[in-house]
Length: 419
Image (cartoon, rainbow, N blue to C red):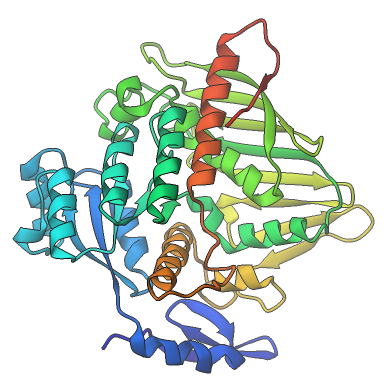
């Protein structure tokens, strides 16, 4: 029987133990270790993520990182030959690799061999397979954005409620330990009243024409991507991050969406002013035409007592600056962090961890939640329940559609964001 590896080590003055990739004080060892005796791996199916896809491999690696999930089947491409090719590369049995997602969901429902499905397709192929999976009794992991449109997102929310299944949305950046730390500090009111939020996400990979790029092609095609290009691809990430860390909601937007590279149908650059429900304001910048930039996501939140700053390029550090005290530097793997940050940190201080680990945190928390539900557990750990879902998906689609409408209307300065 599989058991996660357990090791013991010291962080500062405290003895910690590691159960798989979970960092906890030694006092919690016996409770968790005893539960491992009945733990079986959750069985994952995948839709999309075939040859040449980027995000599929990320999902597969992240899902399996803790040893609690295994990939058992897939419909990896709309082209059956490519799907079978991918299945062969992954070492899956030929009878568990499918030529279409409809076939996979139908057959796996009969077999009873799959616990949940991860959908990692372009945006226009999110809604239908998610609905089929939910109605067939499967939980669902969806890459963002949740759907092609806000109407689809609303309908999907109703189906999730009707079926009682769990849906997880992979807004990756919410999985970082120092993002959890920032969220906890703001929730404790350490910064006081939040006054201003800056979020930015510059990339440079679309600075020139990318006609031969598979990844660019579908993202810039309104039939596959939806109403927005850059805003829907990366702008939605920083919108979600701003709301997640602050605990606030955006109520109004003033958006300027531009298409800089000639010949494109969708935006490749976005500047958005924000108003929040507590009276704070903010600035959101998302751009894929910033030459020389790679993936330079950053957030700064200013309160009446101080501010926090987190950068993806230095993701294991959180900087806190106080109005009347010296600045503080928080680091992952240290004993002074919040329980949520400790729960999502995987290695001792000074050892780098990043994108895959943050992605894996979302999968682990989702997996433990659906496992607990299967076992009839009523009380779930707050750390386990901390992953994005339908609510965040609807908020994201409402943000996209509100920004697009506002940007096209020169006569309206501010547009209210309505779910």
